[in-house]
Length: 446
Ligand SMILES: [Zn+2]
Image (cartoon, rainbow, N blue to C red; front, side, top):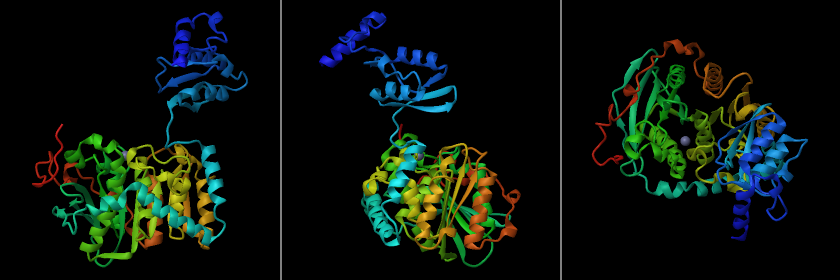
């Protein structure tokens, strides 16, 4: 209380420099201090923080005339704020982000983790702890206890295209709750690889053009590909509303959806080769890709795209809503990805997002773990330094090359121009406005 009184008194008298005394703890409004800092160092400060009412004690003593960044750290840390350098002259001020750290933090974390295991035995002891704790922290097994057993998916008519087919499905997971998606399948006969494709947060979700191009192209080459809505996105919003996506349950439910779809596909289709089960997604879908491989050992090849980093867990609650990164006394997505060793993994990264560190940090770390199995060549990295955060053609081509290689897909069928882009409504199970939602299905009411 006394401290607050002092701060209030300081707020009333801050305008006069002479009022900065020992008695007022040399306090000044944060906004004034930041204006001074910007002027002193000739930079622009962009705000994603609220400075109203923020009074900074010992304000000018926190300034380091020789270092802008040390100054910003000193000035912002009492309020749990931080800065991100956007260019030499622009800095963005942000609230603390528990899921996002710095490249330097990532480097230190990987160095620490690497010290925990020096051979395969030590590593495998670590993997047991991580697998167990990630499940617990995600609350997965509790949720799985409540799922609908042997649910039969609602299937649309099969639509036939050049070298592939598409069929929509709606699978009841928890009672009254459905996950909707589409199955892209080759038109050729025989046993096919299966690739589960969790989504990220790119606009239009699984309906977007580059998603359809990737799913259909992989299908044309011989892999059955399944995508599905994020929780609260697409047709899921009919049931739970869009805001449900921003809950910790989204983290568990999306993981559950991926696993139940895999169960369903293996139980109900006779044309899947269980020795070739892949998982691939971009951005948040890459985060889910890694998580699914931690939770289920049926996957035999994995390709997280523009997501993997040691210093970023994924900023959406569907990626970091449950504290899985605290497993094993502290972990990170790079270590969770390493649990996939020695099975084939492709990491796609670019120079325009947090994956810019992959060639320098995460990939060498993964290679070391794969090396415990004599399988360094089974983990690969396609890094596109001039590209940004998307699932563009070069990233899709990297994914095609990978699955051609590890699953023996037919490269002669690689031709995105043969893909028919369908309308959003064509990819839905419950109709344009949800008019086909089954009786007994949850319905979202505003
Ligand atoms: Zn999300």
